[in-house]
Length: 429
Image 1: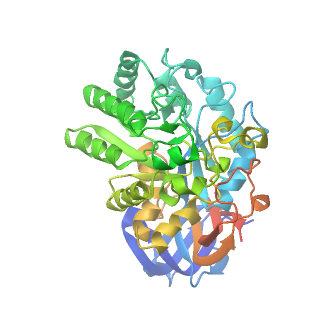
Image 2 (image 1 turned 135 degrees about the horizontal axis):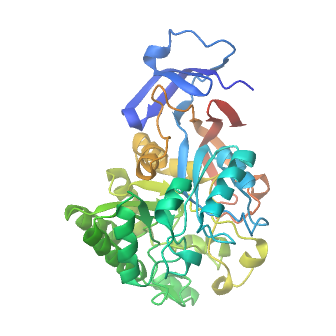
Image 3 (image 1 turned 180 degrees about the vertical axis):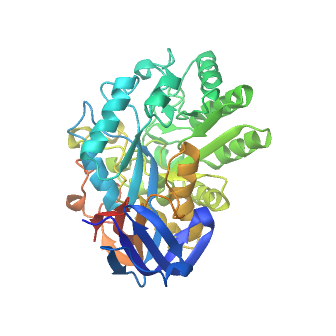
């Protein structure tokens, strides 16, 4: 299939250039030649596939910075190949893979394994994040410099934080020399040890143990202070309460190099969705009250929150079909992140430019990826969106190996109808 394309009469939304206009995108041999209204009169490359995109929106290919994949060690939940197919179906052209595999991605050989497997089997770009500490144990720092040379784009202990503050300080001080991004999940496992949902009236009504918001705030405040102390780059991957936004803004005001993300689940759902103990809504961070969800959407709209992630975390049936308190956390999200985010656009909460920025340009900037732009010379990674196409989520239609979606039977307006990676069409509706 040709990787030279011409997309005509398309609305181009490119946050990297603050561009929103009707025009044409021309790509030759997988590279963008022109994108904008001025390209409409340019000729098509020889052999290019020409598509009339009237009524559609073209954006830089979406970037998902937090994706859990089972391979190696948990291929029954997800493989790199199956995750890439799910990503393409959701309009995502680049994913950052978390290191919580078996074995853990904490040495050069595992980073190289991920990159080779992705080259051989994936239909989208797959970037490995490496572990902060060996075995995700929170004790011994990994070889950050060598892992970066091997291709790691960030460092995280995935679902774990680093409990020893002195260890975290050493890591962030060392990482600063390489410009490495350190990302720590803000979860105090002691304070929230027995909790299974947000602590509040609804948890009491259900008779379930709650997780106080302080279980997020306390480790976040600590991490922000360490980032300020070391002058290192710190990314809070999934904040979920307004107080976290305020803490990050204060740290930025003191000069800390801090960015933040939020799971689409905490933007599109609230604690009431748990209903009568629906385990597909058992997530971390836990779903919060509606007031918090609205406040986080406002913070995203203002840019106080940098990016949206799917927090794709496939779980098999055996770990989800259990009593709520015993079920595993996590949900798949690669195929629904865009559609769920578009609810914020249709509801007038977040403008389309900012929404696309949070799912393409900004994550590419934070993690140093060659993505997130439709500028001439960039790879032709493009997401083609029908903003209004209605569709129903049926778990049997999901391409992920796991089907634990909180959006089963949800009705959405808007989806990716074409996903291009280096000019090659990897998914179409």
